[in-house]
Image (cartoon, rainbow, N blue to C red; front, side, top):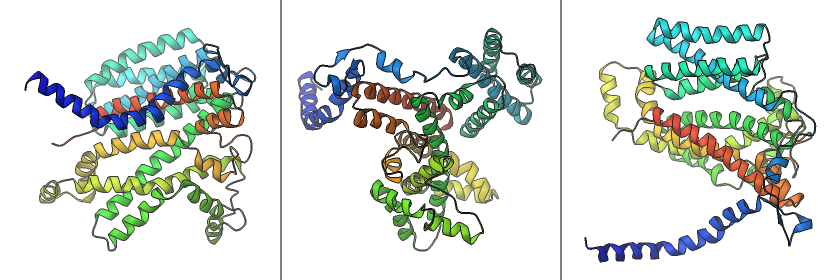
Length: 420
């Protein structure tokens, strides 16, 4: 192809894209870039017309504590690094005992766990020792990890996260989880971060699991399949405000439908909208109910793209339903699951409307129990008129989502199986 012809085609393509680029530039790219610049400025109702540069002051102010936390941040990071190594050692130990059965892997990983138990028994709070042990443990884990071939990577990754949280909660050495639990009442941003992480842990796995079950049912020879598919999808296209208002009535302490159903089983009524403990679970229930239909339709599309010949071959070999699911359906659904996990995680970190409607514009019934990261940004920008620090908080939220998405991407590269 001649260079002049290639140039004409490129120019023509960009001319077609120009209207979209202009609109995106005006309403997306420019506000994103401008807000990043403003995150380094003092811009509030007193300096509305003349914001002035303050450097990193907005970011520093977000992480200021009302009074000092119980543990130092550096010691907490070192212990978290060590706890990650311990969780990895426990998972690798299970892998060796079940699959590899190599003596060196069993001894080395058991040694890491034994050192962790000894440090906890004697409550050794030595940052240098924690760092050295964690560094040695991680160097062996990386080497051992390369020797092991993983299947069902998502299962092992979820097990690793569960073990890590268990280790953090049951350790005398303070880690990230303990730090957040201690610091959430001393810093509003960390309170919002803790609430959001709690919401993500509750909503995303529940949403994926329920939507997969619904998709499997809809993919079978069930009657009125089109009706059920539409019924599950309707909440996704319905206004969040309308859904939240309906659920606000369902959660009502005295006249709510949910407490009425619980009373049929002789269960005491729950103060869904007044008890601090139920704030995040309540929000998660509404969000899962709204989005599970969308995920189910995506899963259903993935199920219908699986070639029937795989199932026919498995039936010839005498495979039962569970074997067909775990060895055919689930591996071939991994690209769909990977997509939904990323989309669901990003959406979960942006939860706001449900909190605002359920609690009449307040971040929970009391004690900021419903304060999420997006609500934190909204409160700074709209109510306090501190636009500079709100922009800084928004970019911290962006960084957190980026980190979690990157971790998912790295894990997903090993877990996803594409069939050409």
